[in-house]
Length: 297
Ligand SMILES: Cc1cc2nc3c(=O)[nH]c(=O)nc-3n(C[C@H](O)[C@H](O)[C@H](O)COP(=O)(O)OP(=O)(O)OC[C@H]3O[C@@H](n4cnc5c(N)ncnc54)[C@H](O)[C@@H]3O)c2cc1C
Image (tube, rainbow, N blue to C red; front, side, top):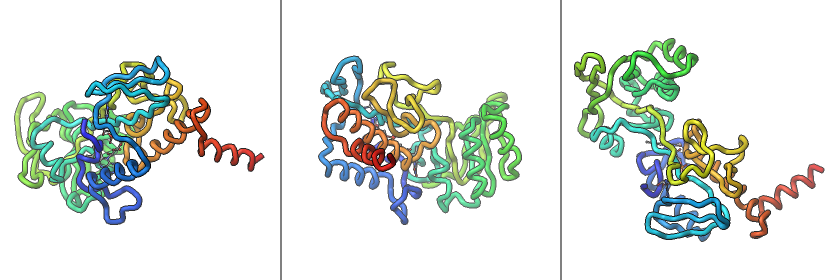
């Protein structure tokens, strides 16, 4: 896995508070790391390949064979946006050439304005991305490999009602064209096999996310869609007492840097409280909440 996470794959982050001019994903991740290290975080750059949550303290094993014992664990392993898997798609996504897997993140950038934009996918995310891009684009073309959508009726109806959105049914994107910036996608008809080019100024891939949970070996409850389940809403505790989850690995809805940071904060406060309750130290969070309770009483 790549240290720094998904934002290492994006050029500008424009929607994180505190950066009025925007910031590159790489710079933001370097700053996050530096700030954590300033508070004595010890960073081990290895993948966790196995966990044992049946023992106390919990035991984690890494790809380098290191064994880590821990009284509490926060799972924050993110999710990987699914890509089509084309070389030119990856090249132009990494160079900021108009290819992205997140319309809400990148869609408002000036170079997508008044362009023909292709959205790949047929689910709710694809419809949401199409509707979002219709605000900025000249035309939005939803490219879907089937002749019906997986999206919910309400999202489908909203997309059908938007004049700027049209659909290319039974089409796969088999290549992305353009040197520095995308100029077209090559489509292949899934029924006839016929290939043709569609000129576009942007491509958004909206075919889902894979949460990184394989290393958990089924020890933590997951939702039907594979994201880590939290026992109650607005909390980060998982099915294992002492194990918490934050960020995209538990969030199948918002999937933004600011929400990942927010749930990270929530998980840290819950973990701190968990440690204090287990006799592992004082908890500022617990003290604050006790104070709030006595004030309200
Ligand atoms: C192309 C793109 C552009 C985006 N642009 C924006 C944007 O502009 N603004 C915005 O708010 N959001 C944006 N997002 C979404 C944003 O990147 C995510 O919401 C955010 O990064 C989630 O943070 P996270 O820490 O939960 O997960 P991630 O960023 O996925 O980080 C998870 C980390 O865990 C590590 N990891 C995974 N498995 C293991 C393991 N077994 N052992 C050890 N480490 C592991 C990974 O290597 C990674 O470093 C974008 C996403 C994409 C794909």
